[in-house]
Image (cartoon, rainbow over all chains, first blue to last red; front, side):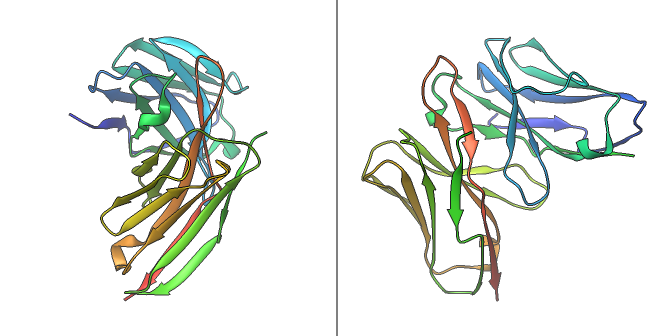
Length: 115
Length: 113
């Protein structure tokens, strides 16, 4: 299995809703990442988990709350989002966060729309 | 912060033409990665480069690691319609136990049959 699976593929939520994005990989990778991508822009790093511990938070607002329940799963909990948070949210994994030179494997993303 | 600048920003070409794009940084990188992103999908790794001057091919794609270590180039020969997409260079910001992969500004490629 060489895939990163993200669910749901599309999500529409209101500003008062609570929702979660899910990401799963079974490649034995020990680093997992959340990226946010606005239209026609490059992906921007949000969070890095290394060996199930949060190692980087790129000053992301607290309305985004990551969670890594085990080495295969990564969640992103969403609460009280704003319309400007609408974007494609990408999950990625790599063998080791200290050696990203072997490349990250990305999921297909969750297209989030906040109304 | 660090930024990777890609040029051109977009290209509109005819099927069969060759394509060249580049990526430049103000800082030295030890690894260059080239990704392609189709609409509504995540980026897919095309080529990884690990050494200054290295030239690596993947089918019709060829990428080079610039000798200054501040730039990289991607060429696509004999383009076909499925080459359409956004091409991103990427590199890990060096230093520290956890590297951060940053992406270039992207080159949008459109191929007319």
